[in-house]
View 1 (cartoon, helix red, strand yellow):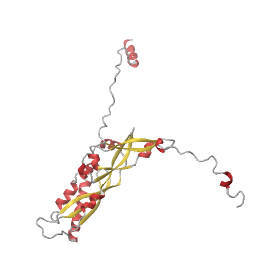
View 2 (cartoon, one colour):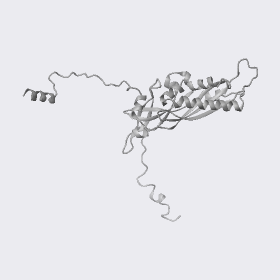
View 3 (tube, rainbow, N blue to C red):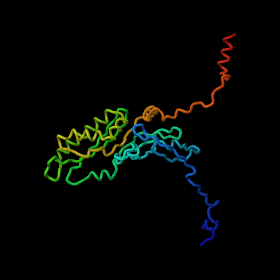
View 4 (cartoon, rainbow, N blue to C red):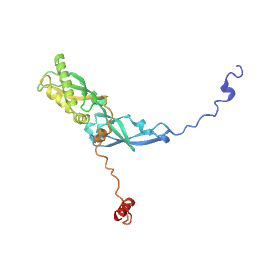
Length: 266
């Protein structure tokens, strides 16, 4: 090998040596996550972010972060554990991250448990605009049910019946979601109000069971409004400060008031 060709061997590595790596968690700080007032548990978790340094601001890095939480944890109810809620961080107040609803989905095991043989699976979806400007995409799932005293083991629906049921699904989803604000829609999604309404109105076409809003996606958001977000999070979190411990002495007097009183006497 020619001398001077392989520079690394001749010089003995890079100039200055390898930089010592510090612990990355030393540069991080914790923020509390606050869920909207629709849910019973407001303080629902914590999130990490790199501290503010130079032009990189910690609060800006947190905004837009999407968090996935179980509805059982948010409402302290184990019966609702088959639903996953997505929350999006919209605003930072001190060490609190104020979130807004971003989506909902049924868990994988719940969807698998619903599917059985001998029945028809019917799905429908609709894009709906709420009264406060959010465009929401709703996905509905339903299954045909055996009639009372039915002898036949299966309960398959005809294609014409499926089309009628799907049309009815889209109608009900559009009506229920299009006439309310997003926060009211979330209140409807938790107790399956839309699913029960679909089952009730499609009894004449074919009896249905296990009707759920399988997934909810926020397609489009209106311009960010801090006042609406504060309404969603209620009237503060009870942090109204502490009453003064040290009493002000009687001799202490506002200088401006004292000078005004002196001018009045003159």
